[in-house]
Image (cartoon, rainbow, N blue to C red; front, side, top):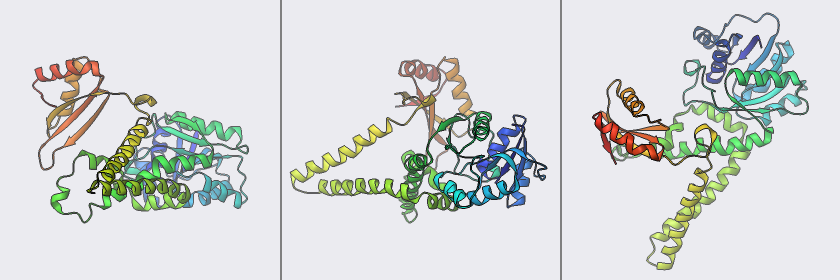
Length: 361
């Protein structure tokens, strides 16, 4: 791949362009908002000068509702040897292209499983896709050149290719991406009218659950509008669980001992099923999540404190497998949770104490 045309310079389009440009590909940037394309170009993602001739690959990175139209227009102009889109829904765009009578041989639908709560070119990074799954949905019609160029794009972005059927992809993202977004928003919505004393009690749990609720509503409305059926199917199951959980909680209020026992059983069931489901979420390096020991360290809100903790851990010969920070509301301090192999925890704790760190249980 020597040249690429990126149509749409939001987070994903600009991130892909940055990755390609950084590896020597000449990237041409197009956006309905010329100012956004100029911003992406200024960041080093390529040039917003018009493309002369054909690019090797056209990457359509526009909202789902506009993908088919953008692809059809690029194909009509003969803008590239091959075409792909990066929309989060795969069945709809292909059906629309078929209805338009487009030749689908040079086209392949793709979806990089990476993103942020922020959007736009200024949120883009060249390493956004590194180590992340990038779904490819070829069909019998997809020609070899289109597939090979898509695989080259994935490799240049240092992502991990995953081949799936388009409909299976849409059902999968409904479960692991689209439904979590809605549920996060629903939980966060409970805080909108909550008393200030309630909000001040927010801890790490509510921060974790509501993190993605900060995402752009307009973007998600377009995504959910393109995949409503599979998302509704998942939410139907969630609604059934909610109904059962509400009944179990009401039963716990009962004076009848038998009803109380049934309530305990109901709550225990959903919690245990949650444990089982969480255990299936891939952990570090894609493997099953490991059981790490947590070494909790009190940290002040000062420049260089995190670097000092990691340096001290390195001097102790301990690899930090994961890290979380729990902020103290209204305080210039927080709790850093260092996750390490269980056998390494005692040595790390002792070493950090020697270096003056205050540990917490």
